[in-house]
Structures are given as C-alpha cells and as structure tokens.
Image 1 (cartoon, helix red, strand yellow):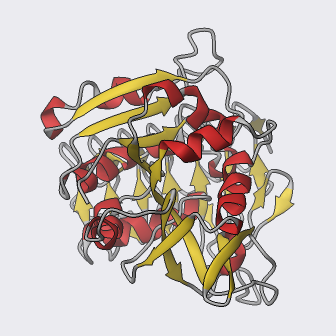
Image 2 (cartoon, rainbow, N blue to C red):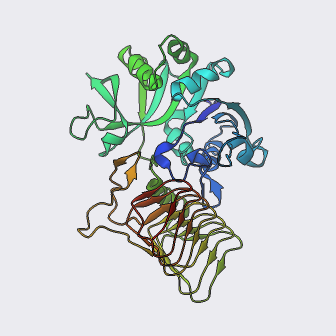
Image 3 (cartoon, rainbow, N blue to C red):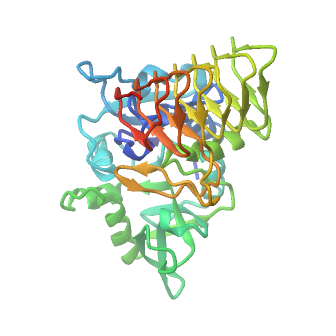
Length: 381
C-alpha cells in the first residue's frame, strides 16, 4: 500500500488534559523541543506520508487566554519536508463531526491518525506493508491489559463484529485494543454522513462497519502512547529521550543545582541554587527555585524558594488527581504537581501530591493548597 493523505483531528477540547490545555489543544504541548503533533508528523513523514490535512480549533481572538493553533506552530510543513493544510472547526462536537467537516476534501483512500501518536509511523509500518485491502477500514490494534482506557474489538468466529468503548476491566470482549490509527476508504465517510449526530458517531460507525464485515485489524507490538491525562507525558518523554535527560537551549542552571534522572527541561528555563530536579517535565521559560520530583510544569511557571510539593500518599497508594470533578487514578505511586502556563507559586506554599494548578493561578506565601486550583484563581493563607 502507498502512504496516502493523512488526516489528523486536533480540534477537541482536551478537557482531561487540563491544566496544560488552557492555551490550546493538548497536541501543541512542547516535549523534547517540539510540539507533540510535530513529533507525530515527523514520524509519519519517515514512512512516506507527505501530505496532511489537519482539523484544528480556530484562533479565538476574544478568548480569555491567548489561544495557539496548529497552523501557527507548524505552518506549511516545508521545514519538515511535507505539505500541511488546515481546516478550522468552529466547535468541537466529536471526531465523527470533525471528519465529516472535511469530507469533500478527502481522496478515495486516506489515513486517519490521532495527533498524539508520536510514533505513528512505527504503528503504520505493518499496515502499509499489506496489499490493497477490500475492507472499508483497516485499524491498527494492540493486545493490552489496560482495556478500560480504549475501544476494544469484539470477535465472533475470529471475525471482528464490533467495538466496545472503554469496557470496565474484566468485562472486555477481548484484549485487542483500538490504537486510533486507520486506513479508510471514502465509503466509510459516506456511511458516516447518514448517521444521526452523536458525540461518538465515529466509533459507533466503526462498530457498525465491523458488524457488516467491513473492518480489518492489523496488530502491532510497537509501543503506544495515549495522551488522555497530563501524567501520560511521562511515558512520551521516556520514549523520546531514550533514557537520557533533555535540556533545551539557553537553560540557566545554578552551579549548586542538580538534574537527576528522567528530566526534560525546555528552553529558557532558570534553575536556582540548591534545586534538585528528578523525573520532571519543565516547560519553556520557567523559573524554578525549589526542588521538584515527578512534576509537570507548563510554560512560564514560576516556583519560588521554600515551596514544598508532596509526591505520594501516606499509604503509598496510587496518587489520584481530581479531573473534571472526579478522582482519577494516575496509576503512579509518585506524582507531584501539574501546573498550567504562567502560574506562580510563592515561597512557603505547600502542595499535596497530584495537585492540578490552573493557568496563571497564584499560590501565596504560607498557603496549603487544595487538590485543584482553577485558572487564574488565587489561594491565600
């Protein structure tokens, strides 16, 4: 199979990725010197994909916060050796609606890829090695144990007959999970047009096509990196860094500061005297004057001296941040703070493990922070 046009849907609200999504789609988060979506485009270019159509959220000039777009980040794609075109989706109404918005621009065959698939090229290798298929859709699948986070393929006599979305662990129809990478024919889009609107219409139509025998799956053992929550960035960092630390340009490191293992520090960061960093992701332009472990900072965060951030629960159980009002297990025994762009943590503040701090919030001297602080909220002693 040839590598056709790749459609990348990057217009969702990224609400579960908060507080790192206030200023733009989660795929625009910079990691190891580039945005996540750029890593994805580069990976696809490596297997011969040269043309991309990216569905993005439009620039919101009147937004409370400055909003970034993929087009502003990647431009025409010429420096990457590819051609990028864009469609501004006025409102996020699910991936099916986003795909239908560009239906008239699609060729007979195309790829559909999630923007956070940083190794999409590796995931696609086995698919592109296949002969031209008869199926309307070929999906990339992987055997996994954490099936509750994915769409799971349902089989009947070794034939795919459906997809169950995020089944509770123990009730999954199989262990083969949908990786969000597809080869599609226009026939799928035409069928999708006839389906009444639903937030999950793409998945529902995939399941319907599977029931009709029109979906095939190519399995892969390549690593897969979902990006639903901020702490998923740790696995991405490890894959991109290959076990080494990453330190960007113009980083100012005090002679008494120490960078331990598994650190990703973007450009223009200042690390103060006596600071120890371990297992951290530090965004561009941050000022860090207190030691951090297992924490993620968006761009332009300031952490003054004598700030204390816990990293684990007293009983060593999995740290459970509050996401969209509900506790969500991070599946990590250590997780410090996740801090949105432009936030300031003043000297003497104390933060609990797994705290989520919104963009441009401010934690004052002596404050004991709650487990979640909203964008631009001020917390005082």
